[in-house]
Length: 173
Ligand SMILES: [Zn+2]
Image (cartoon, rainbow, N blue to C red; front, top):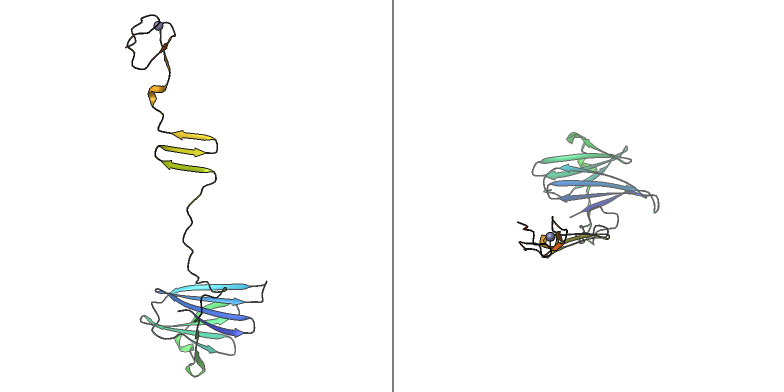
């Protein structure tokens, strides 16, 4: 479940736990002048609600997972790892869970299912195997026997399978 916290009038922080990853996203600015910075850390799944502590110089974030305790320091748009002893428990407050659907600023919106691939004006069909690209057609359905053959002796047209030329009687095979 994603969590968020207002850091100031125009800055918000989002925290999410996607599988074993903790995603931290900082968003600041007003409409039309948005700034975002985010980081991903392999922490394992959270075992506690993430907490936030406000300091004079910035904000500390804390996530507790089965792997341990992770502290990050936020200053301006910078997200950095902080030592665990930087945590000030008496100034900490739990972050607020985002109950309603994903906010437009959240980076965690589920992916749309992929639309069927279209590659320009290229079309493919499997039966018979043909491929059209623009006005060019490649196909495997044209029988080789339809290629017109001619007698080597007189140049007359020969039907496929003929053993003798129909015009001069020349033996073809
Ligand atoms: Zn012939």
